[in-house]
Length: 205
Image 1: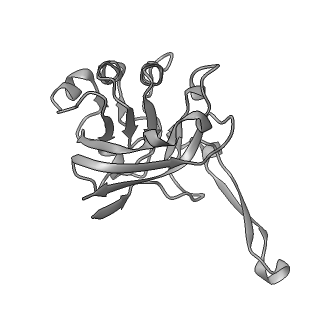
Image 2: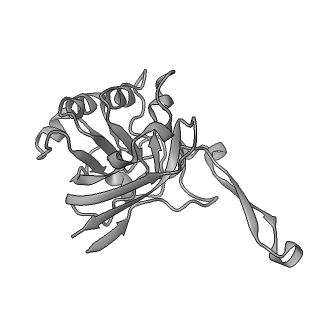
């Protein structure tokens, strides 16, 4: 059995969505061992920083918040699809892959080979989202900090989430080969949140 951690490490200099400085996390020591007898810190960060899971509330006014997602849906078999070399992922790109109905797919792209999530990151285009929704996929993960970019009205988010599927963003898949894995994707249990950071691991038997 091989265990792969496909999560981003959280630190002040980490890559953030479109390199927006205000999205960088801040980790501050509020108590020190020398002064207080213990070390204690606080973190300030956007809930969509690093590897995270989007709740329906992220894009729908009255959508479910993160704690309402059944955790069993995030402990599941999944299939990593190698989509490297593409600028965006469309229906035509996905049709040539062996995607089963009701599967959980993770999209490996050129994003996994850079630490810079600028304005030209690889994303899932709306036709690709519609195709996956038509297969009733359980979820879609991607190695970008956003599953879409430059699409008015967020059609990729809306299509995937409206189909009942889960979105995971910010995966690190550079070392992961295309194929089948067991996935454990555990979001922090934050009440009424529109998303949450997650530790995601893949297991290959």
